[in-house]
Length: 263
Picture 1 (tube, rainbow, N blue to C red):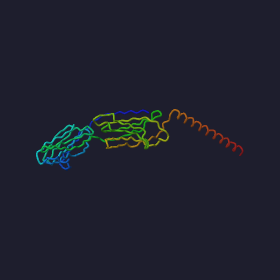
Picture 2: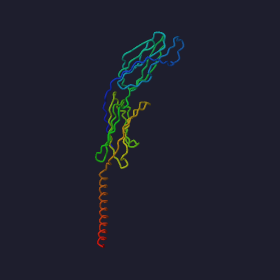
Picture 3: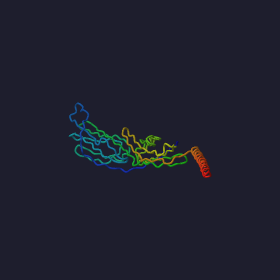
Picture 4: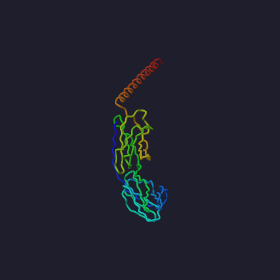
């Protein structure tokens, strides 16, 4: 059995998000002894998913009544910054790493506290398409297309006949940073029991606990592929059947003629 995997990469444009000024307080760690100005820090949203190449706004808010020093620590590229009383909003641009940790660090009256958020970038396949099987010789070629998916390195593509997996492939060796189109080709033999069995293609993203699934519409095997031996056997069987029918027909005709002669 042979399989061929043909990836190609495409990029997607950024999708900016709006700025949120809504504040919800979470209990910070206990205030160390000797600190006279306890305060809380929150970074929201704490978990955000964006399309690869997209942008996002994070709002860092605090309850310090005094002037503070605030900064955002991240490996992502930063854009605009907006601020108000008790909050600072940061824009993060061109998010391509599928999982990034962001920290907002606030210093108030000599005491430093921080809050964290996680930014994930992934894209469910736009579509999963299973082509009708192509008969070549005495084998079938199955081809599945997974359109616009990210991150490809976390993708598993499988082919199923009925409810049984007949082939699967993990694409963990791919490390591209953009949307991708993936084509999976698989060559298989099929027997009489496979006729009219649904064939489907399944794409699964395993994102460290988050599982995103997509599947194709089913296609059917409508013609049985026969090997040369099977074809020869089928031809011999047909020839033998024809011979039997001719012999039976000859006997019947002779009996009929004999009856007609006696009348």
